Image (cartoon, rainbow, N blue to C red; front, top):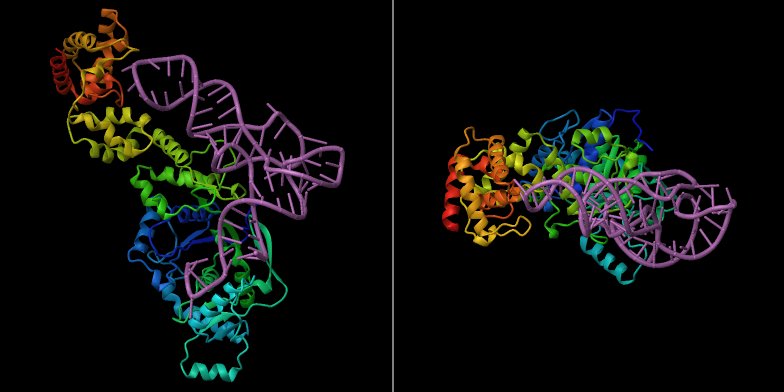
Length: 488
RNA sequence: GGCCCGUUGGUCAAGAGGUUAAGACGACGCCCUUUCACGGCGUAAUCAUGGGUUCAAUUCCCGUACGGGUCACCA
């Protein structure tokens, strides 16, 4: 299974500015982008703002911002221009009108003067009667030309509807699902141009995809059932139908789509929760798509390399935060020291403000232990100041330590550490371990008390030696002295 | 309800008539270890269901069940 690449591949991501970036939408954007890049084509961004009522201020900027952060750079779009602009549908109003009138000319569409009230009543009655087909009753479909003219002249509000065939079937092709046929009598005479002069999504989409030379339409599979109507429009105009790739939804559980109510449906939510952007992309690409090999950790560029249409799934995938977290951890671990420093530093600063620490050593200790960046602040808060703790913390059964042995160990350690010349992990390690050997004690006998004295915690990023290196000589010595006092 | 689509371990999934039915996450156990991790090793766990077709069906066909989508002057 593969897509047709005989023409230059052009794909588009066409979100509506109705709020934040939903994770499902983002995934569609990712697949759309990947396909364009994979085949050396163009990735176009188009804003579908034909619903004036649902428009949300700032939503367009949010779309730009999210796509940019994710590295899904578009070749043509509202802000970067392109040969096929404008790329905002509300600015293309006249274009749609022109094409709609062309269809009316051709007898493939017609004016409808039914009022909203009439339509509402009609649907209510149909629902009441539990009719299996609840379409528009085609009341205006065969109005005499003079009548239409008269109503138009009088300025009667109208919409333009698509005239569906009443018999036969329409078949469309989807790259994943193959051929799908639908009985024409089931198709509604859908509205093409609304009373406010704006096109409906169903119409604008077809016009724009054609005019913008889109060759591959990637979209959510909620459009699967309306695809036949689009095909009929392409046919009416005599245009070539693009290739469709409908992708399944991301679910919260077996029966619900991921929704904003869960508080984890938006891209921004995940960033706030400490997910690293490339890991978010990696994970959601894996929902509904499977790579050929066994590796599943990919950067966006690697996804472009690896991607293959045949790996796309036809059934919905349930979102698993645990798996996403694991992928996140793996991405963090694979980062170079410098890269990890860059992403971790803001989070480290949320937990501690001291400048007198060795951030490099801290980052190295943190990197293998961090699944989510948001865990960092609580892991480093003791660096500012040792929290209140009980001497019971010195008790460790496995290490066979308690408050008394701890006091002895710290008293042995203090002069040793004071004698360390170059203050770094290696030197501290050498000094401490030679003392351990000299005293003939277990590692933990010395190291457990050291960690506790330096952190006041049982779990820390790195052991006592790393902590000493992170804190620096002065702070280390002073914390040990404080601990000795506390134990005495 | 009509129409369309789907159904492999708890989750993501590979598989394309003959396989010991991959792998990952998670769970559990062991090893390593100065904590927690990382890492390493291992265990348990899957073809919704009933009929066909076939020497042979998880794989092909039909039905059933279940799930999803859709039936707007929303996209």
